Image (cartoon, rainbow, N blue to C red; front, side):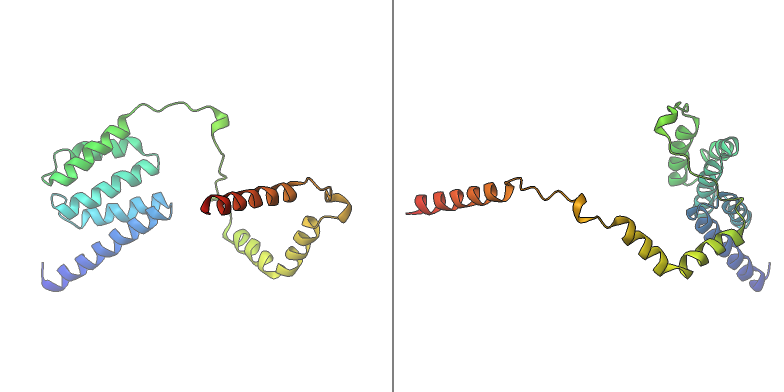
Length: 178
């Protein structure tokens, strides 16, 4: 391999590695897997950096619910020459093989899957919101304003009581300081 091929390989590796981490952090787990698998193929997998890429790949597999692939890769990493990679693999495999607890349905919050939502729909939604900011503010202020009759004007005597407590405390401090 000549020098220019080596530089190109390093640049391609770096691009895929960074893109894989970024995709993972953005919740794009399938894209993350694709980038990280490409990066893993371009680096010495037995190096510290190679181990780091593969640990990211394990977490991407886990996030994408490809648990079998995550466990299989993690088991390989238990034999990795880098001690930090081995340690992380050991911790991850413990988590991956742990029994899944069944949570009651009322503990869960359903988050809608927006993957299949068309891009135009999302763009139009944001455009519509931005196009009518004054209308939205007006409807909010109208709905949140209270009529004078709805407000409880009855004196609950809290202010008078609080004032009396403050005066007693100040009087006590004055008395004890002399």
